[in-house]
Image 1 (cartoon, rainbow, N blue to C red):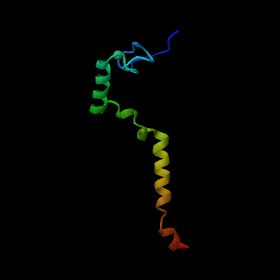
Image 2 (image 1 turned 90 degrees about the vertical axis):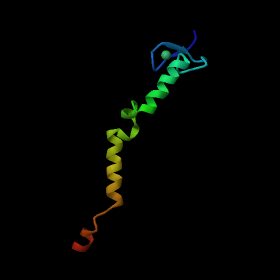
Image 3 (image 1 turned 180 degrees about the vertical axis):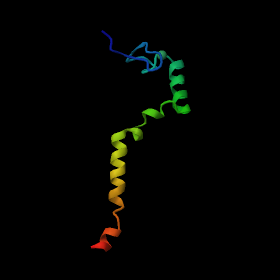
Image 4 (image 1 turned 120 degrees about the vertical axis):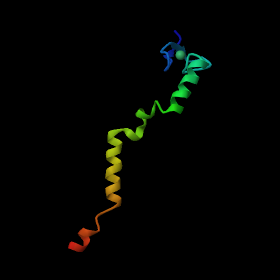
Length: 73
Ligand SMILES: [Zn+2]
């Protein structure tokens, strides 16, 4: 049995040794490139992951401790 995955564009099964893998054809590869270029995939960008944003926010606060508290004590 030949292992296959599915073309991310049209969901057709694609053999792993296919020349255009993971796409079923050059046409689907081009469509995928077009999606990236037009920003259709930006919603899945890791930077928009809520957990990551929380970590970034936390790191930001640690890098900028409030100077005021030093003077109050
Ligand atoms: Zn396809």
